[in-house]
Image (cartoon, rainbow, N blue to C red; front, top):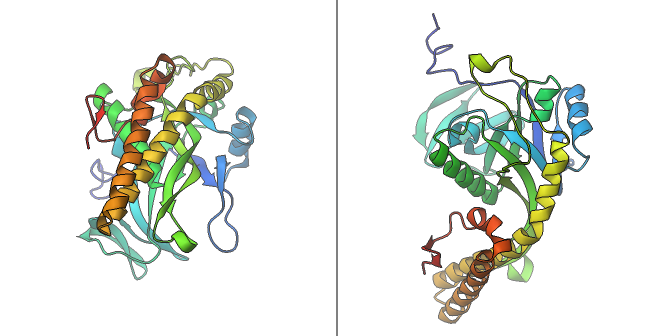
Length: 320
C-alpha cells in the first residue's frame, strides 16, 4: 500500500532520472549571467553521459532529437516564476499564487497570493528523452532550460497544438533547435524609454516527418523492444534545420518587425502620441502582410503554421 502524502499517486509524479541539462548560455562568470550562445551547451554530473552526448552531437549543436515522455503540456514543460538566493529557492509561483516557498529552514506548500520579489524570473523546463543517449544505455530525461518569454510562449503553444490534435504528447518526436531571430527588447541609453530590435537565439520546436524514426512506447508490452533510430539521424536533423533556415529567417524577420511595431504602438498609445501610433501600426501591418504573402507561396508553406501560431489572425487576415 502507498504511504499517504509520500508515495500515493496524488503525491508522486512519473519521473525518470535526470541525465543532464541543455543550456542556452555560457558558464556564469563571478558576477552576472553567462553570455548567450547560438547553440546548446550540455552539462551533466556524469562525465560518461557528457561524452556520450558529444560523441553523437557536435561541440556546438543547434538541433537535438527529442521524444516527450508525458501526456500533457504542463507535465512536459512546467513554467514558473521563481526567486532564488545563495541558499536556494525562495518561492515558486504561477503569477497568481505562490505554490511553494521557503519559511526559515523549511519549505511550505500551499496557495498564497503572489507577491513580487527582487530578482524573480520566469523559467521553463522542457523534459525530453534524447534517443541517442537512450540507445547508448542512458535511461532518463534531459532538461531544456530557458528563461525567455518568447521561448515560453512558443514551446507552450506548439505542445498545446499537438496535444489537442493527438490527445497525448507521450512519445511525440521533435527536433529542438536554436534559431536566430530579431525580437523586440528594451532600449538603453538615449532609447531607454523605447523598444529596439536585437538578434537572439531562441528555442524552437520542429516536428519532423521522416527525419528519424523512434519505436518508443511507455508500456509494459514495449519494455523489451529495441529503440529504432535511422543511421546518422542527428546529421539529418541538422541538415533539415539548415535547409529550412532561409525560409524561416525571412518570415521571422518580418514577424519581428511586426512585434516591434505592436510594442511601439502600445507605448505610443500610453503616451497619447497619436502620430507614432499611426506610424507603428502601419509598420507592423506592412511586415505582417509581407510575411503572409511569402508563406502563401510553395516554398514558404513549410513554416506557416509554426510562425503564425498565437498571432491575432482570423481567416488568414490580421485582426486589427
